[in-house]
Image 1: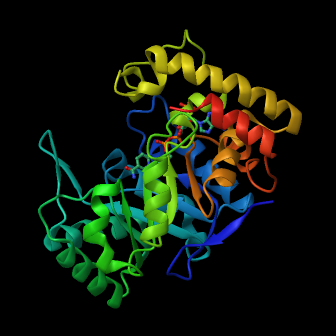
Image 2: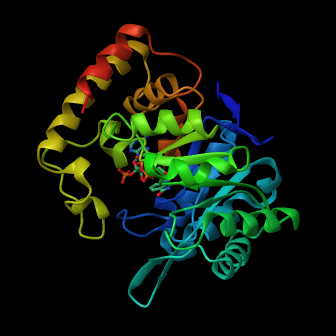
Amino acid sequence: MMEYITLKNSDLKVSRICMGGCPMGGYGWGAVQESELIDAVHTALEKGITFFDTADTYGLGQSEMTLGKALGIHRKDVVVASKFGVRVGGGKTIYDNRPEWIQEALYASLKRLGTDYIDLYQIHYRDNVTPINIVVETLEDLKKKGYIRYYGLSNIHQRDVQELFPYVGKFVSFQDEYSLACRKNEADMRMISDQLQLTPLTWGSLGQGILTGKYDKNTVFDSNDRRSKDVYVNFHGQKLLKNLEIVEVLKKIAGEHKKTVAAVAIRFILDYLPGSVVLCGAKRPNQILSNAEGAGWNLNQDEIKLLEAISAE
Ligand SMILES: NC(=O)c1ccc[n+]([C@@H]2O[C@H](COP(=O)([O-])OP(=O)(O)OC[C@H]3O[C@@H](n4cnc5c(N)ncnc54)[C@H](OP(=O)(O)O)[C@@H]3O)[C@@H](O)[C@H]2O)c1
């Protein structure tokens, strides 16, 4: 059974497992088929997943287009989250939170998604130039006009808390990388969600796929797959070996609960970060089925302690 939660400071009720739209961009994740992605969205709806996360940058808009096409008449039944604040063009990527760009980015996202509103519009990255009060004023204006319902943050850390304090109650959520393969943001996430009263959304929740149990130390990715690059640390060197040790524990627990390995990795976050939502990218229906098994049960304290210890950083 899917689990649901209401995002802080809002009436946005969402499934605690969210379908992440990064692989839906069709870029940098190896082979991806549009028909399979559309089927995956439909499978998600069947499994009670009502929360879909994307961004204008994923596949330079392709993710939003595919999501909009797949949702079709179901648009009004789900919560769609997208992001702005990163401009890609002319071989350059820059962060841009200026009001002019926010409006331009929003209209383009609405068009690609085929919708007249975005439920949760997130600052993908702060540009460290535009004052936060100007960003909030712009988002409030777009909210009043009905283009967005709520707004959120992403990739924020302890150092950002000070400037965000005056806006407690305005933003509803924030995203950071978090999984059994990446616990470096754990303290920040707990502190931010507590002090700024925001719902934590975890990205890279499956460690970009390593925590699903299907990869080993001999895995080689195609050059069109981002995970072939060293910067995707989960698949390289000592970090890969450590991740494979975590996977062995996940496999054992999965066998005992008759769940998939991915489901146990997801369950750990749901149980360990209270009030969180887990974002998982998926390329095809069977991955959604496997991920949806993460909902509706709990790990026991011994299992949590075991996973906590094996994944300690
Ligand atoms: N705010 C940000 O800056 C930010 C950054 C990154 C991501 N995000 C969001 O967070 C979402 C999740 O992160 P992510 O997509 O980067 O990584 P992820 O969820 O950790 O991993 C996704 C990948 O794992 C594999 N996979 C997923 N479910 C599987 C299953 N059940 N069995 C086997 N393989 C499975 C798929 O790739 P393969 O089949 O090729 O292995 C899939 O593309 C994104 O889609 C995006 O919405 C946000």
